[in-house]
Length: 217
Ligand SMILES: [Zn+2]
Image (cartoon, rainbow, N blue to C red; front, side, top):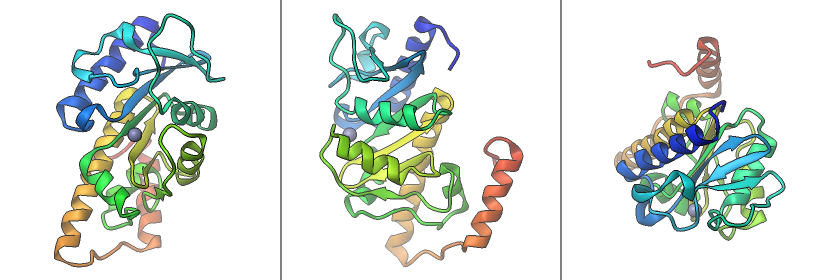
């Protein structure tokens, strides 16, 4: 992200309102952040996205410290911090309890290659991390393992997390994960979806990379 502080905070608020408007954070669940020099700005704990103000966002350093005079950062700040530390390309992180992704997460059911768009998350499936208590280092560690080679994963008995180079990319991917979770769930109502094989998913991933960005196909 290259926006200066104020512009970036406004962009985070705009992205938060977009998530709220599409039902991605029921009951004030979830949180999002964007990288800044030396750290990130993250939504505060228990925030209603509809009334979020740019000044409500909390600046957290990569060492986990947040300055005085700020609101309490989201309880999942460790998850955000660790994704920025591990994935240098991450410019924004979106954590949701979106309904369909969370439904699958409650079953500890990864999203397999039932549709080629699973590759939007970076691989041949979207993994589900094992359960760990919210806000803990254990949860962050489990998420980072499930994110190996991926930009999104489900979090067991909890929700989902996605990151991208930009806020738009991170929100788009969170939306895509929710849409794929819904489609997978729907397909399961009628039977066992036919999965694409590893060779085909490798071909899809190659085509995605070849376009330099996600195709619209
Ligand atoms: Zn959560």
